[in-house]
Image (cartoon, rainbow, N blue to C red; front, side):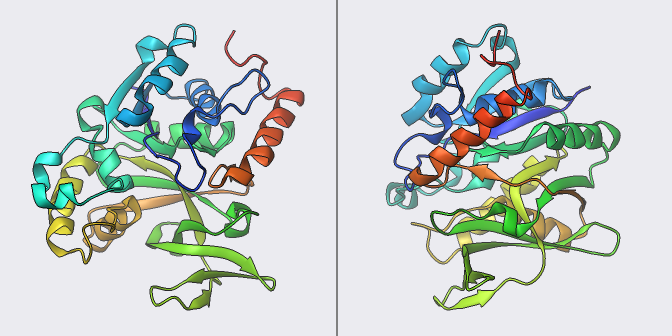
Length: 299
């Protein structure tokens, strides 16, 4: 059984200024998400689930419906599920999504086996999908998780700070810990991040998680448990987010899982900021010129 690819495509793009997941990038107007779908289906994945929100529902569905023979391999989940777990007074005060882990929870009814997860607005490349699919097909025990880790300097934006899951591996190449880290940027030849008190500190070790994870299906039950704890214990329910690196870190500490780190030396590009668009588009179009992709992408 081939694994499923889960794509988080429910972001509102507040820093970008619009729906990044449907922004044209390729020579024929293709999106970054389409190149990820193409790479996944040609490198070991069988089905795709898109987590979307009502704001971009029609735009996303219109995009997929224009791709020949893809409708039977795409499912849609909505991030506004699991509202019954959230007290009404909390939900009414919430103006932003609940985070990546909550988005994954929304897709629980659509995924039966093991699966990988990516962001819709990040480009990962065919090799990463091939490596991940091979791992998932050969590692199907409940404790066998994985992630693609990137060299941190290859994941920075020229146009502002970024957030990354800073991942530390042990001597066997297993993930020892991961911490969601914000405000990351280059300064005076060093890579620094912002602490909770607003001060800056240098990052000197670890790989960056770009949210390319390989999961077993037992993740869904554990996320429900952790989300209930999050709702009771988080400091600020109007803005704090339930993030997948935190869930994974807790599962590692509980001894539930081991996470194999699949290293990538590729240079990331995506569209965190509006100014990132030109570089992302030119990068994709260069890949097309070099023959990595057909144009148009879908025949």
